[in-house]
Length: 378
Image 1 (cartoon, rainbow, N blue to C red):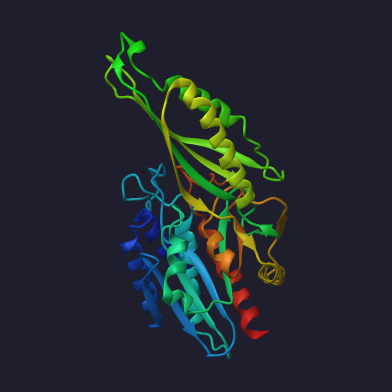
Image 2: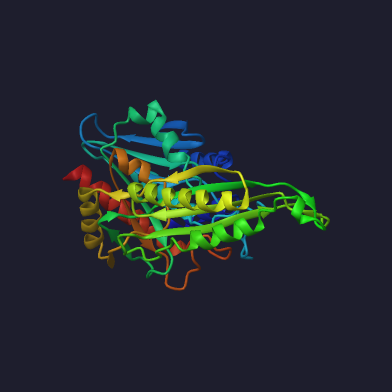
């Protein structure tokens, strides 16, 4: 197996992205690729459209799970290269295509190994972007019966040197929660707004007061970030004063406890502002991502592997501000995630012109090989 074939797989996955919960064809492409090289035991439809490939070397010894993500984002591709997304409005702008290629490359290597103990599970998890995939995998009795001892994952990191390994003690990512706030007023003729209840001023005040809650420094113990992601009000009919509005936010903090305090602060603002404008409201909380908390031993294995492979490694002091549903795994198992530098000039994650750099596929494979070797041969 050459790295060129794995790179071609990455580009194929990039061309045919699928949204969270819809990754049927993506899972099929992964299964077809791996089965070309080894007909191992597979658990299908795990956590939805997920796949788990089981490499059992012995009934004794530790079980290692290497996890990656199947899903893409609802972003229109801005690039015009040959492997650009062919699915309108959907693209791999978080690099999950590259993460999958790395883990699929491990399958080829594992087929050639003869470890004397342990198991390796390659987990292709669905629905990471919505936070729904990891909890569904953990609910699956077939996953629990694997009894993982260690779970590892990586995430590519634009803005860091190519091939560098980014290591964090404690939290790797932030706690993230999304919320939708709906305001129910009353329509009226736009010539007579006094006969209705228009939510515009209320929405404006809420947005201003939510913004004052921000402490946008991830190194600060009280880091908290409230970002408006969507809003809507009224209809495009210019004789009607709006009678309905909604605003959606994503919130970020360092921990579950700090998230609960931030949610209470939002609730207090709603209780203060909405009655002033005579607006009943509803609040819906959804898409929760617990912080990824790196286990000390797992982090040590990552660090030792990076050193042994002579990769530059960067010890970062503050958790990344993004959310990762890998946090659900780190709550229940010894787990850790490391960053893989995607280049100083790379567009940021979730930008329309981002593309996973193929140069770091081999780096990711080498890191996971080293971690597996350390666990199963020491």
